[in-house]
Structures are given as C-alpha cells and as structure tokens.
Length: 67
Image (tube, rainbow, N blue to C red; front, side, top):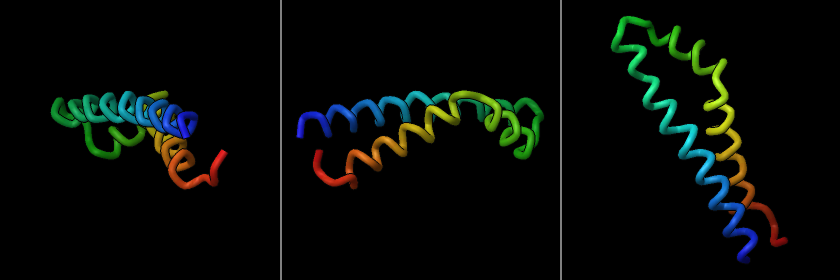
C-alpha cells in the first residue's frame, strides 16, 4: 500500500509541475497570440508530456490491481 501511495505522489507531482506551467503559459494569449497558436506551442513543450504522464501515473496508481 505504501508503494501505491508513493507512485500516486510521484504522479501527482508530475501533473502539478506540468499543469502549473501550462497555466502560466496562458499569458501567451494575453500578448496577442491566438488559442490555436497556444495549443500548437504547448504541443511542442515537455510540460505537456509531464502533465499527461502524471495523469496516467495517478490513474494507474488508483485503478491498477494491487501490487
């Protein structure tokens, strides 16, 4: 059970690190870029992959059968 909790915390940390950065990069819209430009930009940054991998790790730690 402690391993599952540790995996959950790692996934949560990854998703928070990626999500906060993605939210901070919303400032690109304020300086004149369009929403499409924002999505094209974030698809090329590693923060999107951090966020997605964190969500997947959290999902596996919650729904995967016991270790």
